[in-house]
Length: 253
Ligand SMILES: Nc1ncnc2c1ncn2[C@@H]1O[C@H](COP(=O)(O)OP(=O)(O)OP(=O)(O)O)[C@@H](O)[C@H]1O
Ligand SMILES: [Mg+2]
Image 1 (spheres, rainbow, N blue to C red):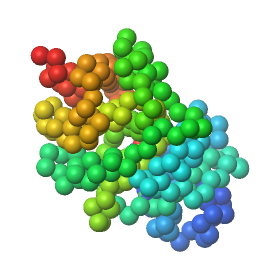
Image 2: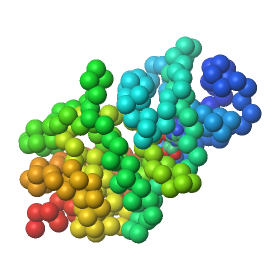
Image 3: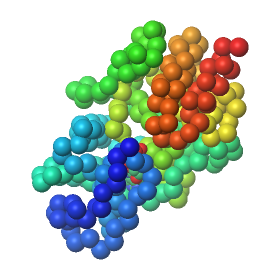
């Protein structure tokens, strides 16, 4: 976990792009960025110090943004001078998604995934078969040429007033099978109160998941269970390891 720092440490750099700061709303959700703040109700600024070990994720977000801005927030500017690496996005006026059973947000989330692009050429991406190779001896089953977000924390989805869902925080863009993202979503749905069958029914509304090879999805569920178990108390919320284990049990018994 990265501690949030007061955004005004980078105020001069931010103001180069936004003009004078009239309002600043620091964001509590998420925990990987040192700075996360909405400036003047128009710009979301996300930043790490230039020497932070995960500063490469800022560059990944910049490179992937042109390919996903239609389902996310457009990147407007970048500032890498001084001690900081800052990305300035359009601020989305919305609320964090709810994954609870009967949440009205689940349908718009399914609709959003219809606009996912293939893995773009010329953008460095993680590869699904490498990311989970230490948790599966069949990780080649996860290979594919589709773009996956992979971090399905509901804090990474904002629901606008018109009900539309946007997926934020593209720090770990990954190429993989087209069913990987719905499969990642399932674990969060179970952790949020869905029975595994119900969670799979939601994911199956996304056609590539409905058509996914059964043995590949089971291998992925097992890899996720092993990963969340390994992450243990450092997980972004409790219950994910248990949810993944319940999903595996449901698929294998
Ligand atoms: N464009 C945006 N407009 C408004 N709010 C946003 C925007 N992008 C992100 N947020 C809010 O800021 C929070 C933190 O952003 P983000 O998830 O990108 O960063 P993070 O700190 O790296 O999070 P994580 O710990 O999940 O990796 C999000 O959970 C969301 O509530
Ligand atoms: Mg986040």
